[in-house]
Image (cartoon, rainbow over all chains, first blue to last red):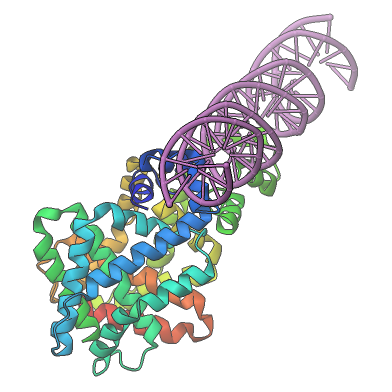
Length: 174
Length: 174
DNA sequence: CATAAATGACTGTCCAGTCAGACAATCAAG
DNA sequence: CTTGATTGTCTGACTGGACAGTCATTTATG
């Protein structure tokens, strides 16, 4: 998985399975004893990274008001992405790949329940309380991804951008 | 170009050049008299679609206050994407492809000046007036893309979602 | 010794890009 | 008006390389 993350981050999804095997220090053939197909590997990797991102974002959440909780999650989320740029990069690629099956996407959605709850709580009394939950979640997600990309492009001002992004988000839903 | 748009929308960037040539009604070989390489085709297509999207969004802009102008642009933008789902789909694929050169991205950025101006005007007196312009633009873009995706997934309530998205955007920057 | 795991050479498939020749358009000379 | 030389465009079979996945064999393990 680690090897796949590194190789895909560097070469994209077109990377040869042989390259991944080599990076992992196993033979080409061995890789296919662990994963039936390349698509299988990709799907498993997607779930693992998504899950890790979710845990990272939710970890150590304070029992507090919605805004504080949201800000905490936002901060952890951004931090995870900046500390793990390769994982983040690979995840972004997998996100838009059509190798990811509908089942995998559904499983990922379920694994994100914790994060969705935080968004739900934050918007419950805000201006978007009547919009569809999935739309709100999609918009929040989009803001987060964009903020992360921006931070990666200008890491020196990471904290500043993190705050700008959060405040933009909060104005939107809070 | 039209053929490439159709094929890429359907099959992704992995589509064979032969498939594009066939769809266009010319021979495999002919395609390479018009484009040196597949990458060349992809880059040109990206610029064309991006340009078309920009023109569509800016067309018939009213000389009016920032909010009205912004809403107009937003509406035309969403409409273009819903009326041309294949173009939109292909553009989304090209956007994240690493076949697109830095020069092409730069050219596309320049072609979007008109849209950036509208965003600039809208945020000039708002809460994001001190944030970097590129960050603001990235966030707005992200909201637009997410809204479009959502509308495509539930076209029956298109108008409603279009409004939700715009209001979210305006709360963020206006 | 028996079983499981790992190996890497190999195969079939796919595809970007090439090239030798077919075909069409233009035009100067007879 | 005809001819044939010239130029430019189109064609699709072909090539070389890349790559996912297989499998007979080797190596480790209990």
